[in-house]
Amino acid sequence: MKINRRNFLKKASLGAAGSPFLLNSHGNVEEKETGITYSQLDEILSRPVLKKELFSTPVMIEQVSLLRYGDSILCKVVSRDGAEGICVSNDLYMTSLYPIFVKRVQPFFIGKDAVQLEEIMRDVYLHNYKLQGLALWLPVATVELAMLGKIADKSMGELIGDIHQPSIPLYLANNNRGRSAEESIARIQEHVGEWPFKALKFKVAGRMHEGEFPTGRSERLIPLVRETFGDEMTLYTDANGGYSGVEAIEIGKLMEEYNYGYFEEPVPFDWYEETKQVADTLEIPVAGGEQEPSLHNFRWLIKNNALQVVQPDQFYFGGMIPSVKVARMADAAGIQCTPHMSGPGLGYLYMMHFVSILPNAALFHEFKGFNQRFEMECPTSSLTIDENGAIKVPTGPGLGVIIDPDFIEMHEIVKA
Ligand SMILES: [Mg+2]
Image 1 (cartoon, rainbow, N blue to C red):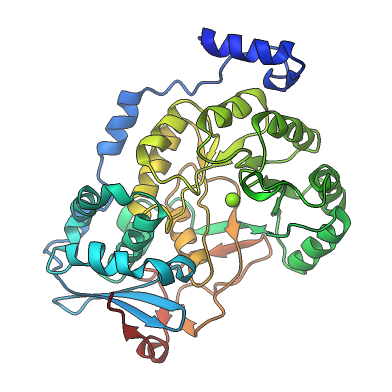
Image 2 (cartoon, helix red, strand yellow):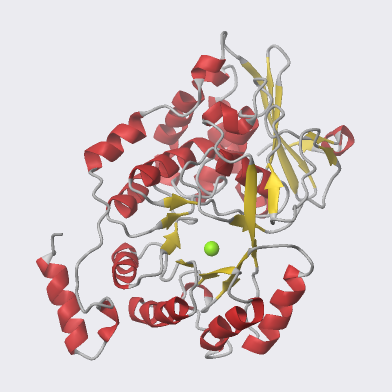
């Protein structure tokens, strides 16, 4: 394994200055590598995702509409032959980003062949690359996820991959912060309730370096959660970029002591060097990618083994197709993938269809709750959590659910 001399000196000098944390447990400074090359990753990135062979004729898109009712935002796509796709968008941000959708994304899809979806998405990017980030990717994802609706008699997963996971094991994501370790435990227990989850994730640190309150909460909570839920529960933590590299290594070693599964966003997501230093030093896998807006940056993070678990978010990262490209690169590098699940609505269904096609799926996947907003039917899954803490993926066309038409009818067309 090659040692980068500059990093060696940097790490060695930090060690000499009294911060032993940037050395791994063997006292070495070797970088952990995946062995994958950039040319291998580039070949993977060049492969198409949407299975065009499933379509014998073009699917011409006649109508793309953004619809709104209060804070609920939907995208409806209708083909010339009457095939229809609906996306329940992420309203947390789309209530601000709808002008980008209407002015800069929607026009690229109307009158086009849905089978050429990837080519259309590349065109959208070329005309909007200066907006790269959630502000662009969420509107793109909204139309992409609608396009992958009922345009063929296939589930969303089958349109973009082969089914590896017919049922998705879940972890419960708890967002509690700002309370003592003891109060936090009570809230986490209440959240888990009677559900048979086998895995749990909770927050540590203060979000993006805002400082932790109360001080010392995470150090107390990490052992306490293990003691409370026992050795059989898989535990993850999420720092939301709350630590410096040195702090992350210190708290990461505590997680290792209590056998935690992974450590998510130990440092701010765009601190790439520090992320890699933390990952190189710790034994516990480092997870990240929910904020990552760039496929090229994912390529660097994967090649350099800066993350051992990648977490693209289908909404924040422009849809299923770019997320699959991240998952494929990770798979080739021996890295696991599990999506970050954003927001309410049908986030868990998009998560499930994405995970269904992953050969390199992590053991458990993020769950933040069921849809409470509208009625829907799902003929192919009960959409309930079974005794193993898993949900069966619907197998019907598109998302596999039928949303109450009266709910859709309440929405009005959005104009920027
Ligand atoms: Mg997170």
